[in-house]
Length: 459
Ligand code: 2HG
Ligand code: ZN
Image (cartoon, rainbow, N blue to C red; front, side, top):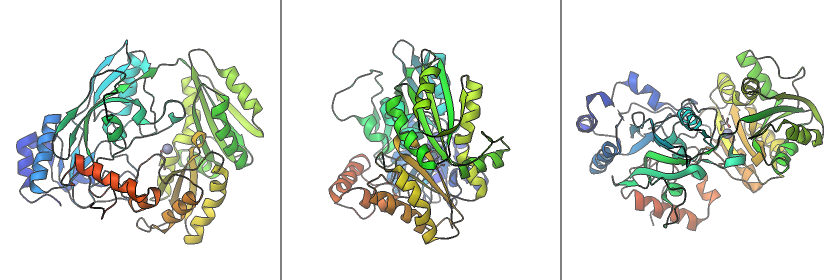
């Protein structure tokens, strides 16, 4: 339920007059998602400054039956953090800042609103690094990336966000502050709450602080961008690299259409004289120079048509642009539909070969853009030229993925965009369990009620 008229006053009493916004001009950036596909009507935004204030806000919402959407950097891509039903937006902006980094143990504790770039900086300054990296790092926040279990470009080596979180503080839908930020690297004292909260998309509670297990800072990093004339060779090589290179940190995949769009959108020189086929970006990192090891693996791959190698961060960043700028470049074409799927290793070539045809069979005016995390057979399918609320193309992709035994969300989560597909992704007993877990954390169903857990399951 949206907040009643007088509700802003109650919130001001909790957080102070400067941290409640009603003015549509101010709330605009909290209402629309990054893609522009999910655009909410007027809403109220509150910015609590502590876990205690979050708790009071949640209790007040519970008393008045007001639903909440938690929002970090608003970089989500599945409509999971925008108030489409007029929910109150609880922004974590003021819960930011690194609290501590224990240099000997490699544990970093920070507020939920801290950006991933700030986490990287804090970790590196203490001689460590953070295992998660993603193109939206300057805006994406720690709390948001935990809530969505963000993946990014280093999953192949360090796993997703869930794997980095050793402690979390959050406020449940009942307003209770639950904190287990002990800072220990091991904890086996029952249900592992950081794992449950990670990926729960704000449906169980609102993350306010977290403790992260850092990874060693590796001084030597080499990046290679490879072009293959046949996209199938690119896909098969991407899937093979992980086993061949223990020090691999990223194995990314893209194709000629996307690379051409990135070059034209941002005025970049083409990476090689010819834009054609498929591209694989491989990065290795270690405490010694691994360029020779990378070169040996590249030499063993079939049919590499072109290769560029970067051995310093500036040259590396130049190669990364061709992959990381896909998202922004596609948004210049139109409002995209976004899918983030994965198939069992070995099935990616078939997905890539078939997906475009399945989409254009439904809507011939659709344009299809493919790129992704090839090392894990995970593919981003972006579709432009289709009305934002026309879900038929999304369904065509997800149906194909399910047929191939894949996952309907390998990275961005379910949000609103894929909620109707949860019953396809999971059997009835799993959905029943999800629903019961939600009501244990959020008895009145006020935490992001339109997201993730399917409707109509009141057991
Ligand atoms: C990426 O891998 C992000 O760059 C965004 O997950 C993907 O824009 C997308 O669809
Ligand atoms: Zn991705």
